[in-house]
Length: 237
Image (cartoon, rainbow, N blue to C red; front, top):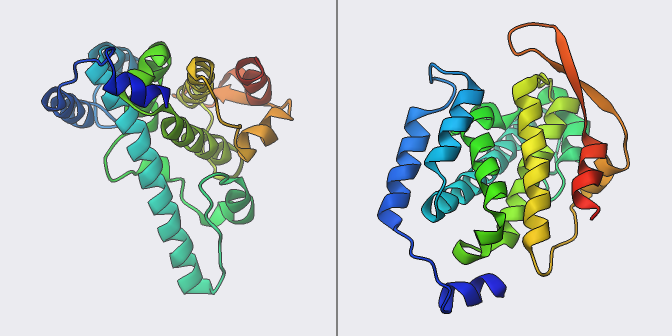
């Protein structure tokens, strides 16, 4: 693997696990839904904080942890629904859309209440932005393939939440989706042997629907986002 050869070879980067842990703690506790500044300002501050190889490792950890926690949460929700109703729901990480189509009204979107406290429009959006801006260096610090898989999971949950989970599409939500798509494209472009796109992405790429994007502070529509067009632009290269 190219990333492993770089880690073991002469192009190894100098990483500091202690620094990474300090960065992770700072990102986790200073920012999020409780912070007294707008999400756009949090993302700007966080991308500056994580602008290093150690920050890149932390950004990858955030995305991976968010995807793992969301999966555990959905499994727990599915088990609780089965306990109460006898209804069995299949939770497949590679494609959450069938689950949300079948049981969306009964499910809680997990990204707003993760155990880590990472918030989708703050730490997650910033981590994704950092991963995109430093995509060519990813294989010097981690294996990009599982990271890309987790990123697609977060994108899947984001878009399914819009369609089936009653998640409001405001400018912060649209910015997260835009960053996820753009960064996934940048990571794919930096890989020697990129993996096949997951089913959820291929399904959305066949569409041409535009979602209204609302002002976070009110009902006013301030724009739109076409997920299919954005994905085709970034993934069909």
